[in-house]
Image (tube, rainbow, N blue to C red; front, side):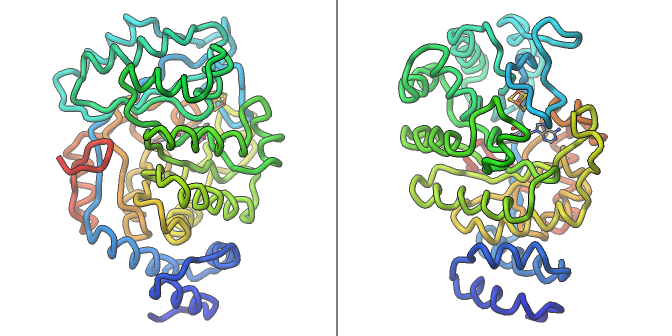
Length: 359
Ligand code: V47
Ligand code: SF4
């Protein structure tokens, strides 16, 4: 393989011989200007694993409340209780949202919300039961390590007990949010009231131990350093060596509008593509890398398929968290639009369920 930057040769050696990349390799990949060299290596790994298959799921997002006691600095979605635009769905409103799309063969319901100060744990169990009853064929992918920790403090139950109750109600897997950047510095500065890096990893370890798969994310493009990004990815990789419970990794491009960091510039295409490729190359033990079109636009997500991504998330229909932070992307896409996006990039669309079984 030809490279403009000779620093990539030893990394290519490792990639082709299946040797694990280390911290320094991650930094080299981020620092190089040979973007296409990085892409070729990431694509090599992607094609070894999935050939030209590209996954997507018919899914629905349900954000049952934006009331949150954490009020992270980067969040445009959350509100205080009673504040203008604060909302909380009662069970019948949540049911109505699910019922409006019952005619579509949706396979995954992605359900997350703020940490509400007064909703009881029974509310969340009822939510999961309601969705599972209306949509037995769909996987309820709900809550993050942040909520699991909160439910445990709310109820006095152990993490294990909380997770088992949720499993009993029908929880099938968990999304990857709440990891932000696994760094104490970023925790203190941007999300001091939310659980920090060590607790996030500890909760996920318990979740995986009980057989609930999860995803993992990284919120990048704010005040974090490249060292902090690479360390974040390596922390995920180390946990995955132990548990094998991560299904997909999703880089989340920070959207500054309407946040307390609105003076920052949004991420650009180069950083977005590089982050997908670096994730593919460093995370040798997490099967899927998702290009989340909501955050990086459908056009760039299409290009990301040649930078190591093998999944485009799904149809979604009503996304709130990124759109409240200024995203101009559509809030949903039809199955035909996603398939077209994949085909016209030269890839083969594969509709999947939440566990990546082809439909
Ligand atoms: O944890 C908050 C992030 C996450 C902003 O697992 C922001 O399949 C950008 O985790 N700009 C929630 N991001 C979303 C999430 C997710 C999304 C899609 C798929 C999956 C999956 C998971 O959104 C939060 C936080 O890191 N976030 N504010 C913002 N202004
Ligand atoms: Fe709450 Fe999540 Fe927003 Fe933080 S990112 S304020 S935890 S809703």
